[in-house]
Length: 228
Image (cartoon, rainbow, N blue to C red; front, side):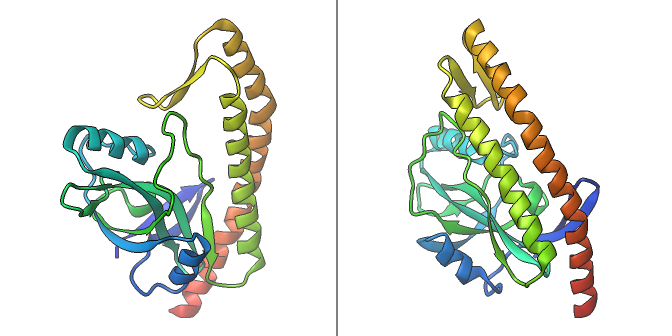
């Protein structure tokens, strides 16, 4: 099990791929209504880009066949909580699953992705699905609860902002460059108006999350020292 360090707002959290038998994994599976649990070999394709797993797999299917499978990548933030990110892997023509996308959460390189399969296997990739991350706490601690609440609140704002943008006629999602494109000047102005309204809210939520993260790192250090 490879470990990685995640840095947010200058703080470090230790996390790693969840493994078979990880405490809380079955509870998380039930929470997500996952239809199956897979341990998927992770071999990032040389051309695959981080942060665009859906489109990496879509392009791989177009080139090499097989199909896209949606689910949740699960990592364990050591001594604190499980964290599930919505994700996609490649089901090859022979039925075998392969994770072709590099991930900050798992140290970027090869390994084994813990994958809870999403019962829904059809998402419109002309727009980012924006599925909110899910947590399964392993401890009871006010610092963890506060961080999770702030984390999900910030993501919910980002998702709401994205949906507002989607409602503007003349806005398209460029999945190659991972950005929105205004097809005409009026759409561009409306996009700028939304940015002025929503970005301060998102930035304030992100600042709060960063403050709470420092307490979460201290909590993790305490738990790891107690277990040593």
